[in-house]
Image 1 (spheres, rainbow, N blue to C red):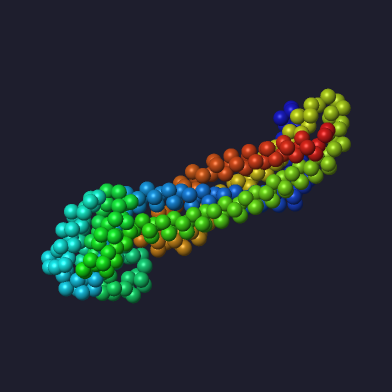
Image 2 (cartoon, rainbow, N blue to C red):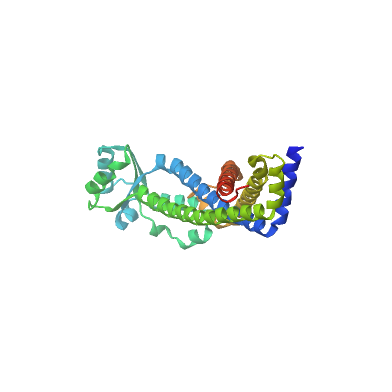
Amino acid sequence: MRASFVFSEVLTGLRRNVTMTIAMILTTAISLGLLGGGLLVVRMIDRMGENYLDHLEVYVHLTDDVSQSDATCSDEPCGSLQSSLQNAAGVESVVFESREEAYARFQQIFAGQPELVDLTRPESLPASFRVKLENQERFAALEEEFSGQAGVNRVVDQAEFLDRLFDLLGGVRNATFAVALVQAIAALLLISNTIQVSAFTRRTEVGIMRLVGATRWYTQLPFLLEAVVAGLIGALLAVGGLVVAKLGFIDRVLQGPIEANIIPELSLADVLLISPVLFGVAAAVSAVTGYVTLRLYVRN
């Protein structure tokens, strides 16, 4: 009997303040959607780290004349450079890649972007040594040793490009969390105002219930549950929005980089994995905000 009464009171409260309830749900959904987007970016960064960190290499790019004339690295100065790199401290392996091999690998990596492949000529890609280091921190010493040597154009660390990409994604993540925080504050204010208005419109009913012996907790529970229910509906909309955004927008925009294995693909499983976090945050924040509001502003 008590449970049915509380349930009916929750439904009555949600219907009575329908405009404020809808505003609260939508604001909560936007805030949680942005939070979920930030969490997805975090998962993407973590997965990229797992994919790339164990495969980072240093590229020793050769000059155009060496790239053009020595496709097998059998002449000087290419042969001497290869031997020196193999004997350098901290070097795990050295692989020579001719201009033709570099172009073939480029075509394979960017097979999903035919326009880019068509615009790129083999002559624009230099021959190079792909050097795997035992410790990536050895790059500075290797660069100092081989930069400026005959036949060497430049020494490039893949980690530098990865750091730039991580910085970009980190900036997107931080911006998303910042906007989510602003939206969360707006949602908190709406939850508080909705509870206050709901309690005010039912002040006579609550007063009568208190006079006949109902506890304060029992009379205030429907208001608290209203906030929690609205928050959970907002979380449900946020999860649905993330699914729609993934299928209808993210997959299409990032199709090229995903097919080129530059960034990992986010699956529906990733969205579902963060869903419990969004529901938990929605329930906890709504419950705490509702409880604090009732304690501070509702005296009956």
